[in-house]
Image (cartoon, rainbow, N blue to C red; front, side, top):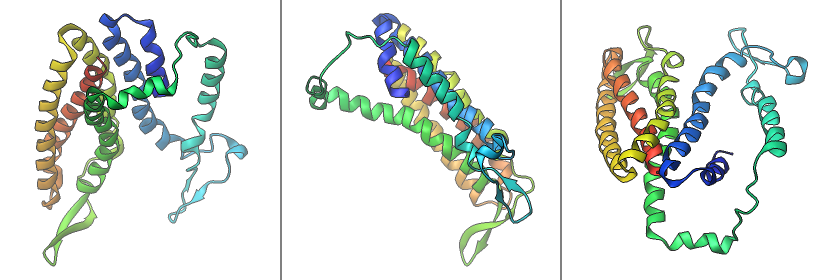
Length: 248
Protein backbone atom coordinates (compact mmCIF):
# COMPACT_ATOMS: atom_id res chain seq x y z
CA UNK A 1 0.00 0.00 0.00
CA UNK A 2 2.78 2.40 0.91
CA UNK A 3 4.80 1.76 -2.26
CA UNK A 4 1.79 1.96 -4.58
CA UNK A 5 0.60 5.21 -3.00
CA UNK A 6 4.01 6.80 -3.57
CA UNK A 7 4.01 5.77 -7.23
CA UNK A 8 0.42 6.96 -7.65
CA UNK A 9 0.73 10.37 -6.00
CA UNK A 10 3.74 11.37 -8.11
CA UNK A 11 1.50 11.90 -11.14
CA UNK A 12 -0.51 14.65 -9.47
CA UNK A 13 2.34 17.13 -8.81
CA UNK A 14 4.83 19.05 -10.96
CA UNK A 15 8.52 18.32 -10.50
CA UNK A 16 9.12 21.51 -8.50
CA UNK A 17 6.87 20.28 -5.67
CA UNK A 18 7.18 16.49 -5.90
CA UNK A 19 9.69 16.28 -3.07
CA UNK A 20 7.30 17.94 -0.64
CA UNK A 21 4.25 16.00 -1.84
CA UNK A 22 5.96 12.61 -1.67
CA UNK A 23 7.51 13.38 1.70
CA UNK A 24 4.15 14.46 3.13
CA UNK A 25 2.47 11.28 1.91
CA UNK A 26 5.31 9.14 3.21
CA UNK A 27 5.46 10.96 6.54
CA UNK A 28 1.78 10.29 7.19
CA UNK A 29 2.38 6.66 6.24
CA UNK A 30 5.33 6.36 8.61
CA UNK A 31 3.23 7.69 11.48
CA UNK A 32 1.70 4.21 11.46
CA UNK A 33 4.75 2.97 13.38
CA UNK A 34 4.06 5.37 16.25
CA UNK A 35 0.32 4.69 16.12
CA UNK A 36 1.03 0.96 16.37
CA UNK A 37 3.32 1.47 19.37
CA UNK A 38 0.54 3.46 21.06
CA UNK A 39 -2.39 1.20 20.20
CA UNK A 40 -1.12 -2.37 20.43
CA UNK A 41 -0.09 -2.32 24.13
CA UNK A 42 -3.61 -1.09 24.95
CA UNK A 43 -5.77 -3.36 22.78
CA UNK A 44 -4.00 -6.58 23.81
CA UNK A 45 -5.13 -6.02 27.38
CA UNK A 46 -8.86 -6.07 26.64
CA UNK A 47 -11.44 -8.05 24.70
CA UNK A 48 -12.03 -5.40 22.03
CA UNK A 49 -13.93 -7.73 19.71
CA UNK A 50 -15.74 -9.76 22.35
CA UNK A 51 -16.38 -13.42 21.55
CA UNK A 52 -15.48 -12.86 17.87
CA UNK A 53 -11.88 -12.07 18.82
CA UNK A 54 -11.21 -15.39 20.56
CA UNK A 55 -10.03 -16.35 24.02
CA UNK A 56 -7.22 -14.53 25.84
CA UNK A 57 -3.83 -16.07 26.64
CA UNK A 58 -3.35 -16.82 30.34
CA UNK A 59 -0.18 -15.47 31.95
CA UNK A 60 1.75 -17.13 34.75
CA UNK A 61 0.89 -14.27 37.11
CA UNK A 62 -2.84 -14.75 36.55
CA UNK A 63 -3.22 -11.94 34.02
CA UNK A 64 -4.65 -12.17 30.51
CA UNK A 65 -3.51 -10.90 27.12
CA UNK A 66 -5.45 -10.84 23.86
CA UNK A 67 -2.34 -11.07 21.66
CA UNK A 68 -4.43 -11.60 18.52
CA UNK A 69 -5.85 -8.08 18.87
CA UNK A 70 -2.46 -6.70 17.77
CA UNK A 71 -3.43 -7.81 14.25
CA UNK A 72 -7.22 -7.78 14.39
CA UNK A 73 -7.43 -4.13 15.49
CA UNK A 74 -6.38 -2.96 12.00
CA UNK A 75 -8.89 -5.07 10.06
CA UNK A 76 -11.85 -2.64 10.31
CA UNK A 77 -9.68 0.29 9.17
CA UNK A 78 -8.21 -1.74 6.32
CA UNK A 79 -11.66 -2.82 5.18
CA UNK A 80 -12.99 0.76 5.11
CA UNK A 81 -9.85 2.00 3.31
CA UNK A 82 -10.03 -0.76 0.72
CA UNK A 83 -13.69 0.02 -0.03
CA UNK A 84 -12.97 3.75 -0.27
CA UNK A 85 -10.03 3.11 -2.63
CA UNK A 86 -12.07 0.75 -4.82
CA UNK A 87 -14.89 3.22 -5.35
CA UNK A 88 -13.18 6.60 -5.04
CA UNK A 89 -9.51 6.37 -5.99
CA UNK A 90 -8.20 7.85 -9.25
CA UNK A 91 -6.63 4.94 -11.13
CA UNK A 92 -4.80 7.21 -13.64
CA UNK A 93 -5.80 4.90 -16.47
CA UNK A 94 -3.27 6.33 -18.93
CA UNK A 95 -0.31 5.62 -16.62
CA UNK A 96 0.50 2.15 -17.93
CA UNK A 97 3.74 0.40 -18.78
CA UNK A 98 4.92 -3.14 -19.41
CA UNK A 99 7.45 -4.99 -17.28
CA UNK A 100 9.99 -4.87 -20.09
CA UNK A 101 9.75 -1.08 -20.30
CA UNK A 102 10.19 -0.79 -16.53
CA UNK A 103 13.03 -3.32 -16.27
CA UNK A 104 15.42 -0.90 -17.98
CA UNK A 105 16.08 0.55 -14.51
CA UNK A 106 18.19 -2.52 -13.62
CA UNK A 107 20.86 -1.36 -16.06
CA UNK A 108 20.95 2.19 -14.73
CA UNK A 109 23.72 3.02 -12.26
CA UNK A 110 21.71 5.74 -10.52
CA UNK A 111 18.93 3.29 -9.76
CA UNK A 112 21.32 1.22 -7.65
CA UNK A 113 22.79 4.31 -5.99
CA UNK A 114 19.27 5.43 -5.03
CA UNK A 115 18.49 1.96 -3.67
CA UNK A 116 21.50 2.18 -1.36
CA UNK A 117 20.63 5.73 -0.26
CA UNK A 118 17.01 4.84 0.40
CA UNK A 119 17.98 1.73 2.32
CA UNK A 120 20.21 3.97 4.43
CA UNK A 121 17.38 6.40 5.20
CA UNK A 122 14.02 4.63 5.12
CA UNK A 123 15.63 1.26 5.91
CA UNK A 124 17.30 2.81 8.93
CA UNK A 125 14.01 4.36 10.04
CA UNK A 126 12.29 0.95 10.03
CA UNK A 127 15.21 -0.82 11.71
CA UNK A 128 15.66 1.85 14.36
CA UNK A 129 11.94 1.82 15.13
CA UNK A 130 12.34 -1.74 16.36
CA UNK A 131 15.88 -1.42 17.71
CA UNK A 132 15.19 1.72 19.75
CA UNK A 133 12.58 0.02 21.93
CA UNK A 134 14.66 -3.16 22.22
CA UNK A 135 17.78 -1.24 23.28
CA UNK A 136 15.90 0.67 25.97
CA UNK A 137 14.48 -2.56 27.37
CA UNK A 138 17.58 -4.76 27.15
CA UNK A 139 20.42 -2.33 27.86
CA UNK A 140 18.79 0.16 30.25
CA UNK A 141 16.15 -2.13 31.75
CA UNK A 142 18.63 -4.36 33.56
CA UNK A 143 21.50 -3.99 35.97
CA UNK A 144 24.39 -5.75 34.24
CA UNK A 145 26.90 -7.90 36.11
CA UNK A 146 30.22 -9.51 35.24
CA UNK A 147 30.12 -13.32 35.31
CA UNK A 148 33.36 -15.18 34.52
CA UNK A 149 34.66 -12.18 32.64
CA UNK A 150 31.50 -11.80 30.56
CA UNK A 151 29.00 -8.96 31.06
CA UNK A 152 25.48 -10.33 31.31
CA UNK A 153 21.98 -9.39 32.46
CA UNK A 154 21.46 -9.12 36.18
CA UNK A 155 18.23 -8.16 37.89
CA UNK A 156 15.68 -5.75 36.37
CA UNK A 157 16.79 -2.16 36.86
CA UNK A 158 14.19 -0.27 38.97
CA UNK A 159 15.74 3.04 37.92
CA UNK A 160 15.68 2.13 34.23
CA UNK A 161 13.45 3.97 31.73
CA UNK A 162 10.27 2.42 30.36
CA UNK A 163 10.47 1.39 26.70
CA UNK A 164 6.72 1.96 26.33
CA UNK A 165 7.11 5.53 27.54
CA UNK A 166 9.92 6.53 25.20
CA UNK A 167 9.99 4.17 22.20
CA UNK A 168 7.21 5.91 20.24
CA UNK A 169 8.98 9.28 20.26
CA UNK A 170 11.70 8.32 17.78
CA UNK A 171 9.42 7.03 14.98
CA UNK A 172 7.02 9.91 15.65
CA UNK A 173 9.75 12.51 15.10
CA UNK A 174 11.11 10.65 12.07
CA UNK A 175 7.69 10.57 10.44
CA UNK A 176 6.71 14.10 11.40
CA UNK A 177 9.87 15.68 10.05
CA UNK A 178 9.83 13.80 6.73
CA UNK A 179 7.73 16.45 4.93
CA UNK A 180 10.26 19.04 6.15
CA UNK A 181 13.01 17.08 4.39
CA UNK A 182 11.02 17.14 1.16
CA UNK A 183 10.27 20.85 1.47
CA UNK A 184 13.91 21.77 2.16
CA UNK A 185 15.05 19.56 -0.73
CA UNK A 186 12.67 21.30 -3.11
CA UNK A 187 14.39 24.56 -2.13
CA UNK A 188 18.09 23.66 -2.03
CA UNK A 189 18.33 20.29 -3.80
CA UNK A 190 17.89 16.67 -2.77
CA UNK A 191 21.53 15.67 -3.30
CA UNK A 192 22.88 18.35 -0.95
CA UNK A 193 20.36 17.55 1.81
CA UNK A 194 20.99 13.80 1.48
CA UNK A 195 24.75 14.35 1.80
CA UNK A 196 24.37 16.43 4.96
CA UNK A 197 21.91 13.92 6.41
CA UNK A 198 24.38 11.07 5.78
CA UNK A 199 27.08 12.90 7.78
CA UNK A 200 24.66 13.60 10.64
CA UNK A 201 23.52 9.97 10.68
CA UNK A 202 27.08 8.64 10.83
CA UNK A 203 28.00 10.97 13.70
CA UNK A 204 24.79 10.23 15.61
CA UNK A 205 25.10 6.46 15.11
CA UNK A 206 28.64 6.52 16.48
CA UNK A 207 27.43 8.51 19.49
CA UNK A 208 24.54 6.11 20.12
CA UNK A 209 26.90 3.14 19.87
CA UNK A 210 29.30 4.73 22.37
CA UNK A 211 26.64 5.37 25.01
CA UNK A 212 25.02 1.96 24.44
CA UNK A 213 28.38 0.30 25.04
CA UNK A 214 29.03 2.41 28.13
CA UNK A 215 25.57 1.62 29.52
CA UNK A 216 25.91 -2.11 28.89
CA UNK A 217 29.20 -2.20 30.79
CA UNK A 218 27.83 -0.23 33.73
CA UNK A 219 25.99 -1.40 36.84
CA UNK A 220 23.95 1.82 36.62
CA UNK A 221 23.12 2.09 32.89
CA UNK A 222 20.42 4.72 33.45
CA UNK A 223 23.10 7.41 33.83
CA UNK A 224 23.82 7.12 30.10
CA UNK A 225 20.20 7.17 28.98
CA UNK A 226 19.76 10.92 28.34
CA UNK A 227 22.64 11.30 25.81
CA UNK A 228 21.66 7.97 24.20
CA UNK A 229 18.04 9.10 23.94
CA UNK A 230 18.80 12.55 22.53
CA UNK A 231 21.26 11.23 19.95
CA UNK A 232 18.75 8.59 18.86
CA UNK A 233 16.14 11.32 18.35
CA UNK A 234 18.66 13.19 16.17
CA UNK A 235 19.20 9.93 14.28
CA UNK A 236 15.46 9.51 13.72
CA UNK A 237 15.12 13.12 12.59
CA UNK A 238 17.98 12.63 10.13
CA UNK A 239 16.39 9.48 8.67
CA UNK A 240 13.12 11.37 8.26
CA UNK A 241 14.73 14.30 6.46
CA UNK A 242 16.75 11.83 4.37
CA UNK A 243 13.56 10.00 3.39
CA UNK A 244 12.22 13.22 1.95
CA UNK A 245 15.46 14.23 0.25
CA UNK A 246 16.00 10.87 -1.47
CA UNK A 247 12.53 11.07 -3.00
CA UNK A 248 13.40 14.51 -4.28
